[in-house]
Image (cartoon, rainbow, N blue to C red):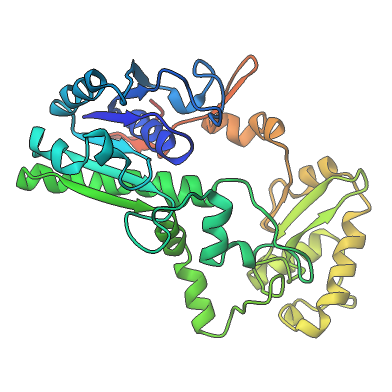
Length: 346
């Protein structure tokens, strides 16, 4: 499968990298002058891995003609420009599909190809704000907490572009006809909220930030400081795991009965008990203590620390080479099973 990716920032390069990881021949069409917002210099940018590069000036007729020649032999065209930009360059969907009727034309934007905001600029923080995610993130009584640029750009944008591309390719393999795939980060983020909307409709979630079971309000789904000013994460939602958590921390039934886990009136006292227990040891001591338990407890690691964690290292989740750190490929594929299962990491 050949993919022509028009160089940009964030979600579109991530989609191209993901398709390259899955085995596609990705040709990245770079601008004569790289974007100042690129993740790193081109030779250090992990999002460029597995791709070939062609430098074209799409504002020059010769550049657009060269792009159309690439499109003729491509299965997918991937672009992340504002609506109308590709049309003005002379390589919009109607032109591209005339050159290649089987082409899957993936358009990745924040607001989408239509709607009142479609022509305006934006970044992840704006898309999260409008979809309600930003307003739901953070502690009660505090300003919304800006998360890492993963939810909108890479989950709601890049990952959905891959889903759309592969789905349209499957359809093209059956019908011989390509199509345009409109990927909007606001759509993807809203789609990711399916379970949250279910809880909202069932009265199990409300819009008051930091007051819900899964947004830090519950003491058994939170983070706790350790004696060395590091942090441990606790996610003991199920009662059997919660009971294990109390037992491992040495909190007896006389101090807190596991049966009272969901009694919100007792949450302040429970939080104090958990906080006091975690302050008696360092993060690494607690990490070793909980390493083989079902208490749903894990240390809060920095990015470089995470790269060296034995579990991630064993799976190849993070690949390190000197100063270079990058994610391994995902998902994994299991080859034909004969006798024993073997996970293929290539």
